[in-house]
Image (cartoon, rainbow, N blue to C red; front, side, top):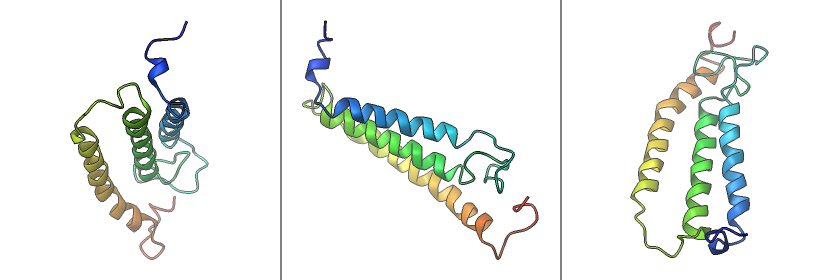
Length: 120
């Protein structure tokens, strides 16, 4: 028997849920250590994704964005009037974290400023 709320969701709900899960898994994978990586990430170790934590933040942002779109436009409560304060605050947190990490990332990856420590 079908869940009563399941019939209230639009067809795009489940694919967006899968996409949210995919972005979440990708965010986790970016942080897994990998000794064979070409250079260390900004967190100071070699990981599967040398673009961590920038790539991690981007994947988290995309996961959150798909969650908000899924819930607000395709979910069972899509007709309810809800505040956008939560998504706006999370967006501002993402922007703030990006502003913290991007300058260091650019400096670390700039070939003119690379030292032996950043190229190990």
